[in-house]
Image (cartoon, rainbow, N blue to C red; front, side, top):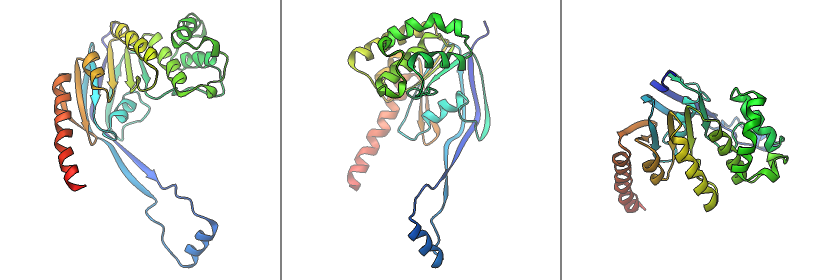
Length: 258
């Protein structure tokens, strides 16, 4: 089997955000008569800035950083949900992205139907998914809700189903974004135990989390994202220490300006 890998070469990602402000008919007419100008209808956001990164077979990469630093955007570029504005992304290996609760699910379909739908999207036949249905429902603790449309599921139930599907199919590359953010203590412990066993089989893991203990526990490498760039890359303990030291240095300055 060929080794798995992920390569990002000078990757930039920019978004154009359009204004969604709503105005009444009266305001629109008055503004037209008085020739008032609306504010800027769009603004540009740069989510990733010249990212060059190689993730090789056997690596478990943790990504840390503040909200808006580009962590989730990087995972979506790797999974080809977002095409890069410029630069190149290459990868080898069967990839499963678990980036959002129930991403790709159809709320009108039942839990069982969504299992088959997700399998089809990933390239599995109905026969291949049939033998995985029972383990998925049992692990997710959703057997009694298998025929219920998932629009009636709680966010925790949707996450349990999504996580169970993603970790049942043995991906070579697994992308996880805050996958442990929802759930009770019982579920969290089950999920962590399943992750430990999955890591023995996965070729590459990329994990985004604000829980530093997860990064240190599961990863053998980490990067710190800051304003769309890689601020540090190395051993998880060293990267987390640098990230925390930076946050601690900023806190007193923010306190003095309050």
